[in-house]
Amino acid sequence: QVQLVESGGGLVQAGGSLRLSCAASGRTFRAYAMGWFRQAPGKEREFVAAITWSDGSTSYADSVKGRITIARDNAKNTVYLQMNSLKPEDTAAYYCAVSEGWTEVRLSRGYDYWGQGTQVTVSS
Image (cartoon, rainbow, N blue to C red; front, side, top):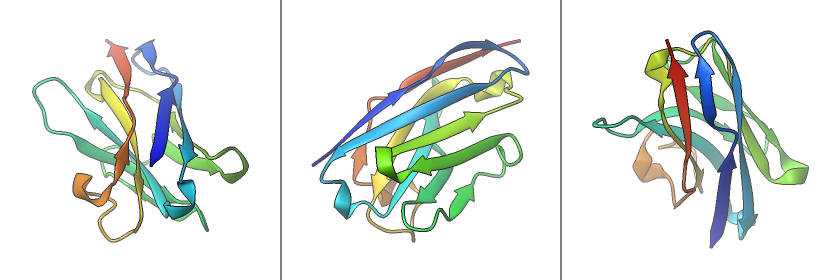
């Protein structure tokens, strides 16, 4: 089992920034990559970004490229999501997840463990 705890969400004005953190514990040796997804009310969960633990390779959704950066700290088993130039449409619950591969990192089904989520609200 892998446990994931997200933090860093909150209320921010449009144009502002937030940094989300996701701390992993447990059987993390099986984790190949970490990803962030988000889900707004009434919408499906969507991919935001992913990163490999080994070499830091990344993947981003087109909607967030240039505004959001994913990073990892292997020593702390923690992944970060730096979000800048936030827009009201970024409002959602943000979830981190663990994947044992890379092939399906842009899909929810590619992940084995999920955190409880942290709410991000961007006001206009």
